[in-house]
Length: 101
Image (cartoon, rainbow, N blue to C red):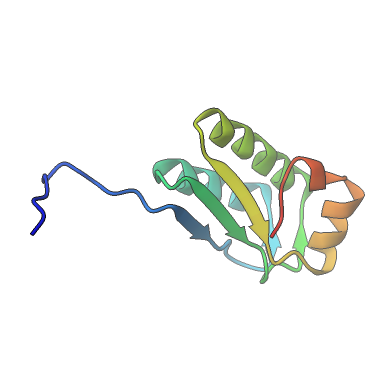
């Protein structure tokens, strides 16, 4: 039997975040950032499968989030890119700074 300390929290290795709505806006990206930074998971996965569109400023916020996470020994990954969201991702050549799965 293992003893546990009441103040000891085991961090999940991965946290999956799903944006609300159909468009990844700057405001929604900011909400995801607050949520990601409040958790201690080593890997943050943002599932964009329900997103039909996104703004450039939303992706810029995700780039800044990844930079912050990397400095803290953590990382960010995007999944489910499709429609205009995938198009904007490709046009802005974000594959080099925002990894996808």
